[in-house]
Length: 355
Ligand SMILES: [Zn+2]
Image 1 (cartoon, rainbow, N blue to C red):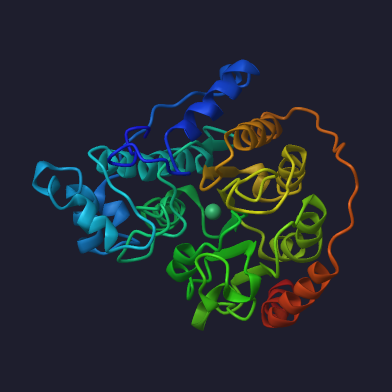
Image 2 (tube, rainbow, N blue to C red):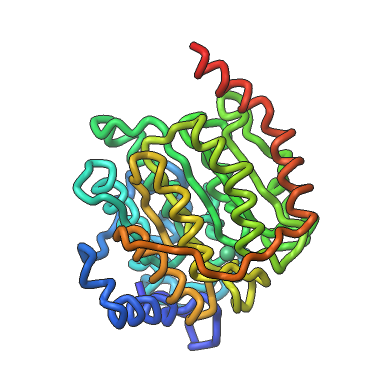
């Protein structure tokens, strides 16, 4: 997946060094050797077709072929924040296939949890177009694979937690009317001015039809959100709702661009902060958690954060030592708005519990 890079070597935040830096850190800390190290595997097109159109799949399959040599860059410019090169096709299929592979193994109980270190990332990719550095929506494809292709594994309810600093617009749309998938995204919104700059990242978008109440957006009003703000969103929104939903597995769209030092995110979660957020999820779905890398562009921050999270998944004892900070006042306002909008879901949850 390091073969996907800018065509002429221009600098870009989403570059192969991201994976190499993470791998170096996991090796140096002796963490990689404690994991089951799996080879990347390409996704079959029929599984990708559960969330993407035939045109989209054909484009990504063919974009690295010779026939695109003279129009590859022109094609990329038709999309929002996308580049392609000769390695993009294979990388995209490997990223999607690898998330499917580990999700299947965790669902089957062959692995207790997993972290898929993949790129290109996925959560901005929509039904019919790549977007925001994302070619295929890896997590959405894996979720549909479990629900539709492997009913024997007994995965009927999936919680997708998206802590990337950007809204998971693609994933939201793919499960917007689907009550089998509860999508929770916490992201910078800045009143609609933060990428992807769409109104549907607001707290008012709670799903529709059967999926009403199964889409939760926690939209920060500004940057600089830290461990304390995220912990507040966890304790007051995500954890109570996850308890009511009672997922069979958790897929984590694990971007690390809300990390301290990230050049794009402007937030400041520490590695210990990420470890704490992850620890708080271990009590659900019998600890069956599959993390999939999304964004995160400060090499040191992503390497340290992924390492801290992997240690949590390995069961290492963890104590949160970072200085205690208070959430912003705006954080309580956002949380209150989110909870008001999701009253319907809470009522449904109570009804389910009652029966
Ligand atoms: Zn992001």
